[in-house]
Length: 425
Image (cartoon, rainbow, N blue to C red; front, side, top):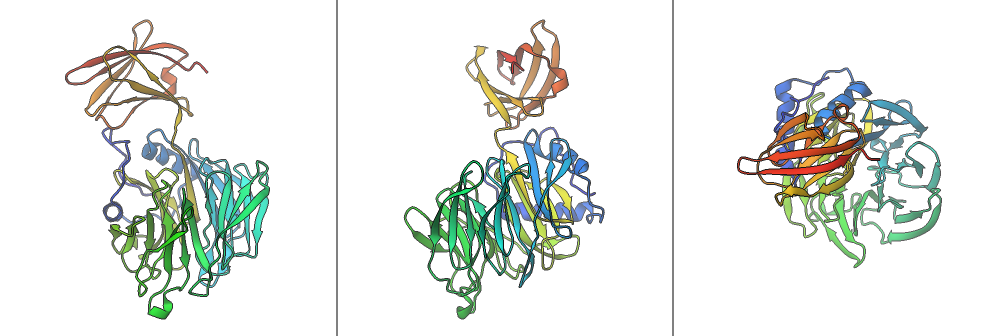
């Protein structure tokens, strides 16, 4: 397995809006420097080990459809344990294999869609329920969540939203889009974030020597905006899960620059022509995680075949292998249970987060580098680490037992002292 250099101790954890063109360029430059990806797929345990380096305290799980065995698999990135949680056939469309699986924002449920059905199940594979039949027969079969309890999907000429009960049964449905598609092939690549719905009118610009029309609808007002001129083309549409209406799409040929535009249609970034370094084929799919600090990137000639996870802040990446199709990464953005502690003296608070893996994350809300030292109530130094002022410090679980601790945070000019109980639950 090939991957980039592990993040150094000064790599930031704070993730901001990313320049996608730059990150894709650097991402593949890194791949070219480190050599081509080996044919051997990493094991789930190896993937989890790489994720610990990449995520710096984030939880994470991957769900994906196998292309040969029609299995739905989940890898828990905390320990590398892989589970088969169900069976679901990938779609056979006019443009090759398609279909998708998708985590709910809270990671509790998973949707599955192919060319004939939409289903939902709990994250452990239980409670499988059919949401809709007779769905999309063409390309780009992607559905979406609208919050944690509603599914958005295409049934050809119509885009629906179904509300789910706790047992996954459908309690209500509503039509979000019912206008006949210009292209006659239907609506596809459906994604939703907040009040914004992104979808493609397949071949909607063909009469104007274009192709697919990537559209964004503001559902409350009904305002619809086309992201491309009528003689242009755009597919593989994805909307950013931050409620901003920002969309990312590429040319359906995958041999022209991809684009990211905001709701007003302003070009935010242009993604240059890029190649899968394994087979030298064009990249086809780029998908934001629910935590936009991470993306999945896939590529192959007619179906996504090789997959990576990319950390957007510093372009570090990890290879997932070539047996995955449409992997969907769910990241817990909360990391764990946090509480702020007041200083014995000084005014700058810190946040102490007890992570789900038992470690402790110490975050100082400063804009400068600092050193953290953790002492037990008897004054024994248990842990020391430095930060550049943007990333937190992670205290491993074996260092800690239940009790009262003293945290000393020191910058070049000031010292702050805190006391906090840890591991009380």
